[in-house]
Image 1 (tube, rainbow, N blue to C red):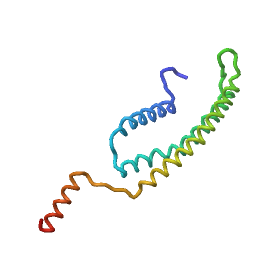
Image 2 (spheres, rainbow, N blue to C red):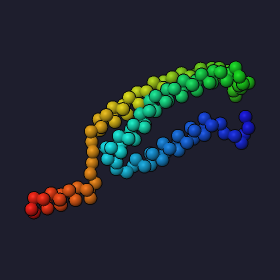
Image 3 (tube, rainbow, N blue to C red):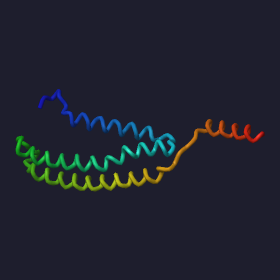
Image 4 (cartoon, rainbow, N blue to C red):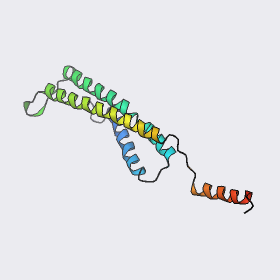
Length: 134
């Protein structure tokens, strides 16, 4: 592999990390339910993507043992560490699926909410007063 060329999968993982980091900062602010609903709608998809990614990464590691001359420090067996990694990825996949289900439930819980800004509420109150003769 050319040291100057970062694989596309690594670039995309970097982009996902950057997006989540930015989201962590942006969600410090107050957001009404319709905005949170949309955010949760995207986040819950991690519950299906992470299991798929985990399985594919585990399979790719197993294949890498056949396609590359894989080495490990101190003479350890690369196949053993690949097997342990596969176990961790399988557990992470289950947890991610559970996370996705919980995020979907959170999204459903606020599905019926709407909101008005303070300015919109003030205008509506003024219109009501005008229409009621006050």
